[in-house]
Length: 226
Ligand code: E4P
Image (cartoon, rainbow, N blue to C red; front, side, top):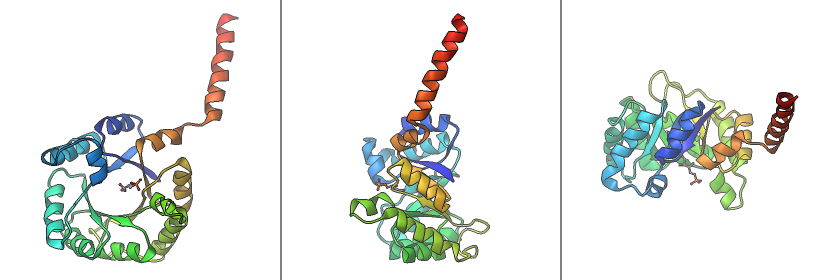
């Protein structure tokens, strides 16, 4: 499984990129708003992320009609070779995805919650599909079970004729809120987990690692003073 960072914060992206495990970034309108960025700076901000990250960077269209999504998608894709256009899973989004994929523009279908949505996204030619986990948990439903269903259902079929030629669809476990979500997504075989910075940091931490390190350091001090 690959790790994407779910943020638009440049400092977080630079930091995570320096760890050597970052394979991509996903942004959304909320995450960009959180940076305090203005509309006029949005394209430059995405360009900057694309320079930092050696991997796909999802930038979301906020349009609601297929024509506008396609126009947005072409503009976003022109910003950098590693831009992926994020498109909501809805009828207009499917139609736009089909067109963008036919032009060789990779699409990440977002706000995907169910198996039928995921299969339709794959059929429309999405390069990535993002089932949301945490938002199911927010409404007292089992987000991980839904993710497992999506992965199992997509695995039943071959979508190689659907998207950008030569590229197969990948599942991004999204709306990930904890290392437990990350672990379960990996056990299910999710291709990618997109993870907020704080959660990514927690994924490398463990109290037993800290305790072990502490005792190694103390014992090494004894060796140095012997
Ligand atoms: C996915 O690409 C989304 O940006 C993100 O994972 C949403 O997460 P949230 O439900 O924590 O807002």
